[in-house]
Length: 235
Image (cartoon, rainbow, N blue to C red; front, top):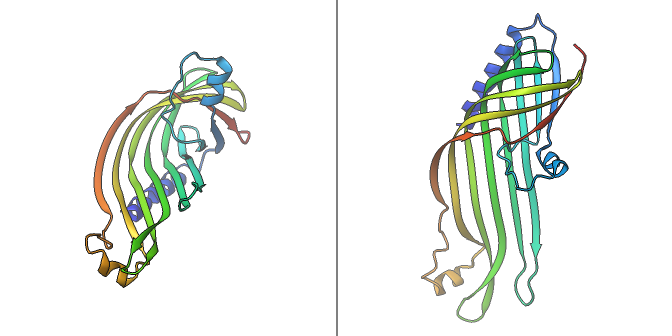
Protein backbone atom coordinates (compact mmCIF):
# COMPACT_ATOMS: atom_id res chain seq x y z
CA UNK A 1 0.00 0.00 0.00
CA UNK A 2 2.85 2.39 0.78
CA UNK A 3 4.41 1.62 -2.61
CA UNK A 4 1.11 2.44 -4.32
CA UNK A 5 0.77 5.71 -2.39
CA UNK A 6 4.35 6.71 -3.21
CA UNK A 7 3.83 5.96 -6.89
CA UNK A 8 0.65 8.05 -7.06
CA UNK A 9 2.34 10.99 -5.36
CA UNK A 10 5.35 10.75 -7.70
CA UNK A 11 3.09 10.83 -10.74
CA UNK A 12 1.23 13.87 -9.41
CA UNK A 13 4.44 15.73 -8.68
CA UNK A 14 5.85 15.03 -12.12
CA UNK A 15 2.60 16.10 -13.77
CA UNK A 16 2.51 19.42 -11.97
CA UNK A 17 6.21 20.04 -12.61
CA UNK A 18 6.09 19.45 -16.33
CA UNK A 19 2.78 21.21 -16.71
CA UNK A 20 4.12 24.59 -15.60
CA UNK A 21 7.58 24.87 -17.15
CA UNK A 22 6.89 28.32 -18.57
CA UNK A 23 7.04 30.07 -15.19
CA UNK A 24 10.00 30.92 -13.00
CA UNK A 25 10.38 28.80 -9.91
CA UNK A 26 10.59 30.27 -6.39
CA UNK A 27 12.14 28.07 -3.70
CA UNK A 28 11.04 28.55 -0.08
CA UNK A 29 12.36 26.94 3.10
CA UNK A 30 10.16 27.08 6.22
CA UNK A 31 11.09 26.45 9.86
CA UNK A 32 8.53 25.82 12.61
CA UNK A 33 9.13 28.66 15.07
CA UNK A 34 6.11 28.15 17.32
CA UNK A 35 8.15 27.33 20.43
CA UNK A 36 10.41 30.34 19.95
CA UNK A 37 7.44 32.65 19.35
CA UNK A 38 5.66 31.37 22.46
CA UNK A 39 8.69 32.03 24.66
CA UNK A 40 9.55 35.35 23.05
CA UNK A 41 6.02 36.69 23.38
CA UNK A 42 5.78 35.28 26.93
CA UNK A 43 2.38 33.62 26.55
CA UNK A 44 0.89 32.85 29.97
CA UNK A 45 -0.60 29.56 28.78
CA UNK A 46 1.06 26.67 26.94
CA UNK A 47 0.01 26.44 23.29
CA UNK A 48 0.17 22.82 22.12
CA UNK A 49 1.58 22.44 18.63
CA UNK A 50 -0.55 20.39 16.23
CA UNK A 51 1.74 20.52 13.19
CA UNK A 52 4.51 17.89 13.35
CA UNK A 53 6.64 19.22 10.48
CA UNK A 54 9.80 20.95 11.69
CA UNK A 55 10.96 21.89 8.18
CA UNK A 56 9.00 22.63 5.03
CA UNK A 57 10.02 23.22 1.44
CA UNK A 58 8.06 24.72 -1.45
CA UNK A 59 8.85 24.98 -5.15
CA UNK A 60 6.37 27.58 -6.41
CA UNK A 61 5.49 29.15 -9.72
CA UNK A 62 3.04 31.95 -10.45
CA UNK A 63 -0.08 30.12 -9.22
CA UNK A 64 1.21 27.28 -7.08
CA UNK A 65 3.59 24.36 -6.83
CA UNK A 66 5.10 21.49 -4.91
CA UNK A 67 5.09 21.43 -1.08
CA UNK A 68 7.00 19.08 1.22
CA UNK A 69 7.14 18.78 5.01
CA UNK A 70 9.38 16.70 7.27
CA UNK A 71 9.52 16.18 11.02
CA UNK A 72 10.65 13.55 13.48
CA UNK A 73 12.22 12.62 16.78
CA UNK A 74 14.67 9.95 17.96
CA UNK A 75 15.46 9.13 21.59
CA UNK A 76 17.57 6.21 22.83
CA UNK A 77 17.96 5.44 26.52
CA UNK A 78 20.16 2.89 28.27
CA UNK A 79 18.58 2.06 31.62
CA UNK A 80 20.75 0.47 34.31
CA UNK A 81 18.74 -0.04 37.52
CA UNK A 82 20.68 -1.36 40.55
CA UNK A 83 20.68 -5.14 40.99
CA UNK A 84 18.58 -5.63 37.86
CA UNK A 85 19.11 -6.28 34.18
CA UNK A 86 19.80 -3.27 32.00
CA UNK A 87 17.45 -2.40 29.15
CA UNK A 88 17.62 -0.39 25.95
CA UNK A 89 14.64 1.79 25.00
CA UNK A 90 14.26 3.47 21.61
CA UNK A 91 11.46 5.91 20.80
CA UNK A 92 11.07 7.58 17.41
CA UNK A 93 8.60 9.39 15.20
CA UNK A 94 8.61 10.30 11.51
CA UNK A 95 6.16 12.63 9.78
CA UNK A 96 6.32 13.30 6.05
CA UNK A 97 3.99 15.02 3.63
CA UNK A 98 4.14 15.88 -0.06
CA UNK A 99 1.53 17.63 -2.14
CA UNK A 100 0.52 20.61 -4.22
CA UNK A 101 -0.76 24.05 -3.29
CA UNK A 102 -2.37 26.97 -5.07
CA UNK A 103 -1.86 30.53 -3.86
CA UNK A 104 -3.23 34.01 -4.56
CA UNK A 105 -1.90 37.43 -3.61
CA UNK A 106 -4.31 39.49 -1.53
CA UNK A 107 -2.06 42.58 -1.54
CA UNK A 108 1.63 43.44 -1.41
CA UNK A 109 2.10 41.80 2.01
CA UNK A 110 -0.53 39.07 2.31
CA UNK A 111 -1.20 35.92 0.29
CA UNK A 112 -3.71 33.10 0.65
CA UNK A 113 -2.99 29.45 -0.18
CA UNK A 114 -4.76 26.08 -0.20
CA UNK A 115 -3.73 22.59 -1.23
CA UNK A 116 -3.75 18.82 -0.88
CA UNK A 117 -1.09 16.52 0.64
CA UNK A 118 -0.35 12.84 0.91
CA UNK A 119 0.78 12.05 4.47
CA UNK A 120 2.92 9.36 6.13
CA UNK A 121 3.08 9.10 9.95
CA UNK A 122 5.20 6.58 11.86
CA UNK A 123 5.55 6.18 15.63
CA UNK A 124 7.76 3.46 17.11
CA UNK A 125 8.74 2.45 20.64
CA UNK A 126 10.99 -0.54 21.32
CA UNK A 127 12.51 -1.97 24.49
CA UNK A 128 15.08 -4.74 24.76
CA UNK A 129 15.70 -6.32 28.16
CA UNK A 130 16.28 -9.66 29.86
CA UNK A 131 14.49 -11.96 32.25
CA UNK A 132 15.40 -15.21 33.99
CA UNK A 133 13.49 -18.47 33.62
CA UNK A 134 14.13 -21.88 35.20
CA UNK A 135 15.10 -24.82 32.97
CA UNK A 136 14.83 -27.48 35.69
CA UNK A 137 18.39 -27.10 36.92
CA UNK A 138 19.22 -23.39 36.93
CA UNK A 139 18.00 -19.94 35.95
CA UNK A 140 18.68 -18.99 32.34
CA UNK A 141 18.89 -15.45 30.92
CA UNK A 142 16.29 -14.84 28.17
CA UNK A 143 16.14 -11.83 25.85
CA UNK A 144 12.78 -10.01 25.82
CA UNK A 145 11.79 -7.59 23.05
CA UNK A 146 8.72 -5.34 23.39
CA UNK A 147 7.37 -3.09 20.67
CA UNK A 148 4.55 -0.59 20.09
CA UNK A 149 4.42 0.60 16.50
CA UNK A 150 2.01 2.81 14.56
CA UNK A 151 2.37 3.14 10.77
CA UNK A 152 -0.15 5.40 9.07
CA UNK A 153 -0.78 7.05 5.74
CA UNK A 154 -3.52 9.37 4.55
CA UNK A 155 -4.33 12.73 3.04
CA UNK A 156 -5.06 16.25 4.16
CA UNK A 157 -6.62 19.42 2.78
CA UNK A 158 -4.94 22.65 3.89
CA UNK A 159 -5.61 26.36 3.77
CA UNK A 160 -3.51 29.17 5.17
CA UNK A 161 -2.22 32.73 5.16
CA UNK A 162 1.25 34.09 4.53
CA UNK A 163 2.53 37.50 5.62
CA UNK A 164 5.39 38.75 3.45
CA UNK A 165 7.46 40.84 5.86
CA UNK A 166 10.46 41.35 3.60
CA UNK A 167 11.21 40.33 0.01
CA UNK A 168 12.88 37.16 1.30
CA UNK A 169 11.27 36.63 4.74
CA UNK A 170 7.66 35.66 5.48
CA UNK A 171 5.49 34.13 8.19
CA UNK A 172 2.73 31.65 7.53
CA UNK A 173 0.25 29.39 9.28
CA UNK A 174 -2.33 26.90 8.06
CA UNK A 175 -5.42 24.95 9.06
CA UNK A 176 -5.82 21.30 8.07
CA UNK A 177 -8.41 18.58 7.68
CA UNK A 178 -6.45 15.34 8.11
CA UNK A 179 -7.49 11.72 7.49
CA UNK A 180 -5.09 8.92 8.48
CA UNK A 181 -5.39 5.14 8.23
CA UNK A 182 -3.08 3.53 10.80
CA UNK A 183 -1.83 0.00 11.40
CA UNK A 184 -0.97 -0.60 15.06
CA UNK A 185 1.29 -3.42 16.26
CA UNK A 186 1.97 -4.19 19.92
CA UNK A 187 3.40 -7.13 21.75
CA UNK A 188 6.32 -8.91 23.37
CA UNK A 189 8.64 -11.56 21.95
CA UNK A 190 11.04 -13.92 23.71
CA UNK A 191 14.24 -14.45 21.76
CA UNK A 192 16.85 -17.23 21.75
CA UNK A 193 14.88 -19.43 24.15
CA UNK A 194 16.53 -22.85 24.73
CA UNK A 195 14.28 -25.86 24.22
CA UNK A 196 14.73 -27.03 27.83
CA UNK A 197 13.36 -23.68 29.06
CA UNK A 198 10.35 -24.08 26.76
CA UNK A 199 9.73 -27.60 28.04
CA UNK A 200 9.94 -26.57 31.72
CA UNK A 201 7.63 -23.52 31.27
CA UNK A 202 4.63 -24.80 29.27
CA UNK A 203 2.42 -21.95 30.52
CA UNK A 204 4.53 -19.28 28.79
CA UNK A 205 3.70 -18.51 25.16
CA UNK A 206 7.20 -18.12 23.77
CA UNK A 207 5.90 -17.92 20.19
CA UNK A 208 3.32 -15.19 20.71
CA UNK A 209 2.79 -12.98 17.67
CA UNK A 210 2.37 -9.22 17.66
CA UNK A 211 -1.17 -7.93 18.05
CA UNK A 212 -2.33 -5.98 14.99
CA UNK A 213 -5.14 -3.40 15.01
CA UNK A 214 -6.30 -0.79 12.54
CA UNK A 215 -7.46 2.77 13.15
CA UNK A 216 -9.08 5.47 11.03
CA UNK A 217 -9.03 9.07 12.24
CA UNK A 218 -10.35 12.36 10.89
CA UNK A 219 -9.08 15.53 12.56
CA UNK A 220 -9.89 19.21 12.03
CA UNK A 221 -6.77 21.13 13.06
CA UNK A 222 -6.79 24.87 13.69
CA UNK A 223 -3.71 27.01 12.83
CA UNK A 224 -1.61 26.98 16.00
CA UNK A 225 1.88 26.84 14.47
CA UNK A 226 3.91 29.70 12.98
CA UNK A 227 6.52 29.11 10.29
CA UNK A 228 9.34 31.47 9.37
CA UNK A 229 9.81 31.20 5.61
CA UNK A 230 12.99 32.09 3.76
CA UNK A 231 12.93 32.64 0.00
CA UNK A 232 16.08 30.98 -1.31
CA UNK A 233 16.29 32.69 -4.69
CA UNK A 234 15.20 35.83 -6.49
CA UNK A 235 12.36 35.62 -8.99
